[in-house]
Amino acid sequence: MKSLKRLLTGTTLAILGLITTSSQNIYEFARPADLAATQMATVGIGDKAPDIAMRDPQGTIRKLSDLKGQIVLIDFWASWCRPCRMENPNVVRTYNTYKDAAFKNGNGFTVFSVSLDQNKAAWMNGIEKDGLVWDNHVSDLQGWRNAAAGLYGVNSIPATYLIDGDGIVIKKNLRGQALENTLATLKK
Image (cartoon, rainbow, N blue to C red; front, side, top):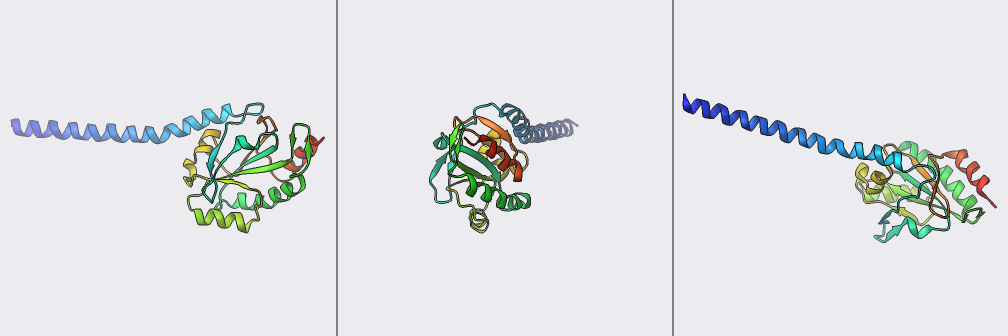
């Protein structure tokens, strides 16, 4: 009887341990979403854009802060994202139209593309195939766990942040003609 009692007690403790460990694991996976929602609320229009420093396809670290003085579109996208790929021609056209323009609070327009890809070859192929001709393409190849996406609270793509020459967020989630119209109003 004592042996049976010890066996049942040991089994019960083991099961409780598994349940506790499992619930902790679930909590650990849930925490980033809670954190992302909080961060998304903190990166709003009028806020200083948090710096992003990541590697480009050649392995060079590129920083958002190095683009200070320009109007910058931070573009969160991925090669596997159909809406992103459909938006890319609009971004390319806008870039080509405004890259050398003089703005009230910035000289020139550029794009800082942050990819949520996990496959480097697919990412590079998307850049080439869509003709994304600007220099600033970065990714940590972590997919939805991308550090910059977490920092900005990005939970769907495409997602964009337009920042002025001082690094202040002036618009969010501009697409197509809305991006061009906004840039037109910012010209000198």
